[in-house]
Image (cartoon, one colour):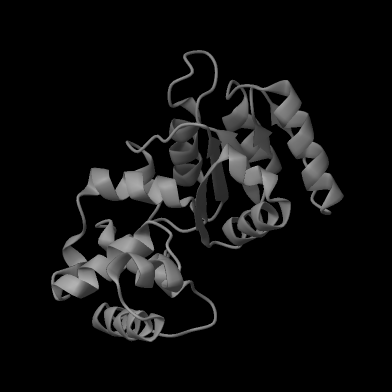
Length: 216
């Protein structure tokens, strides 16, 4: 299901999804009938613009929170040219949630990979969105046992930096960064598995979001 008020982008996304083998069961330019159709269609994932009619403020983000309350296992992907944090801080810890800036759509393979990850219960967070959420949340209480350097490494991870980017920022070797990240993950109790993005889980803790079975 897709809710996007810009007709050109909406039709482009519909074509993109269908070309990738996905069924678009419903699309609209507002949330007017969203709840009713959502409960009828029970889709795997809903893609919403954040700012929608009538007020163009945070209608999409509020709708995302509402859909998650109706069906917690649903995948919800927010798209926006703006960053809304009031509702997103709570949504980011639920699993099956993504928030990407619209220019990320231009990287089609990465965008479709993010969509699939959200539909499967994972996370897809734009680095700029993470930075805004981190600023709003003020850091989490689950990371109090980390050293000052480990806090810096984790904050850089939250901003979407790669190991190479973190090494450049902190004037460290990549091997040293890798060692810091391993220690951070061990201290946070994040087990090494193939099913979960350990960096995302660490960032959730940094944002002050408690880890639950749903977001682990």
